Image (cartoon, rainbow, N blue to C red; front, side, top):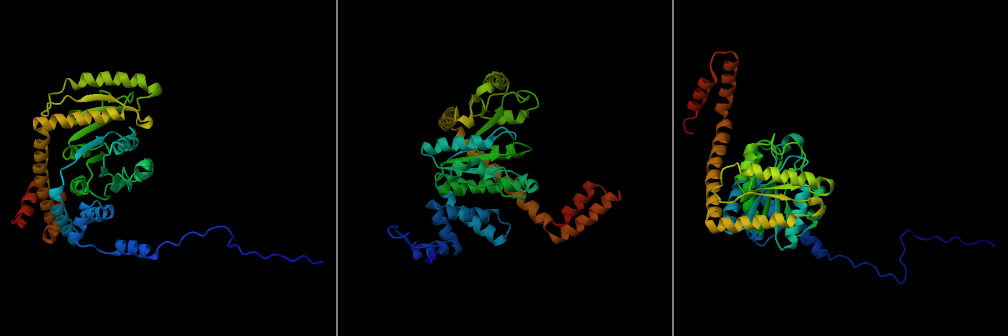
Amino acid sequence: MTKKTSHKKALQEQTGVSQPETINQAIIDAIRNRRQEKPTTLQLIERILEGDITALSRAITLIESTNKAHSEQAHAIIKGCLPHANKSVRIGITGVPGVGKSTFIESFGKYLSKAGKKIAVLAIDPSSSITKGSILGDKTRMEDLVKDTNVYIRPSPSGESLGGVARKTRETIILCEAAGFDTILIETVGVGQSETAVHSMVDFFLLLKLAGAGDELQGIKRGIIEMADSIAINKADGENMKAAKIAKVEFNRALHLYPAKDSEWQPKVLLCSALHDEGIDTVWETIDKYVTQTQSNGYFEQRRHEQNKFWLIETIKDQLHADFFNNDVIKKALKVQIALIEAQKTTPFAAADYLLQLKPEL
């Protein structure tokens, strides 16, 4: 007796198993159309004010673009959003590579999110043009924060000078505030002049340090200590705790040697372990006390005004620099003057005077 072979299909409907509902095609089309459309300037402003993250990202991309039309649209968007900005606390976070900035920001961000805050995380990283990435380029370091609906993370634009990155980050802050983010975290790579750039656009400047790294008091930039409103010694846990406590004492001694701040605030030295979410609440409590004190004595608003004046001058400098070196006449004459300098037929100062006279309208 021949046994019949049963030919079953690979995909076969089983009785008693409900089939998944088909996704509404209208919803799919609406999402696709929304992504493909090019919203007007007014539409982008309205959507940003509604907290639309897609619109916010589009606008920031316009800010980062070198296209003239994009820049003009970006300026119009910033102008429309400006009346709705300045309603956040801006916090700068710096520290050398390896200090645990990404881990700290994730732990700190999660703490703030649970407290009902809306957080935007930005970066100042002019080195990204060399490393082909940015300090926030690897979002996998902050897996939980990336998935948090109260958090928006924007890596630093690559291929930019420090001045360019800083200016665009400052403009991005305005848009994030208009979109409803009440806490702005700005991370810096912790080398070069990036700390100064961050300090010029934040309300509170936090320096992250490691205990036992050999630079508690030596090899550390004096200027960064002067800028810091507080120092947080990270990785203060387990076997590191003893060294962390010693470092805290040393930093406290050092801070008392610096002149008093205009803010009338005495910088604190804190211990924390971002990996274990320990001491993070104390960091926020310290920042909150600082904001309360400086808003009370008028320094908070005064510093914001000073920062605006600083960025006015910096923007003018950047524009004059771009106009000068993008001029075709200047480009040709510059090559000639460089050749003359190399041939020792003129000096850099004489060449500069000659080039500046070629474009007197500047």
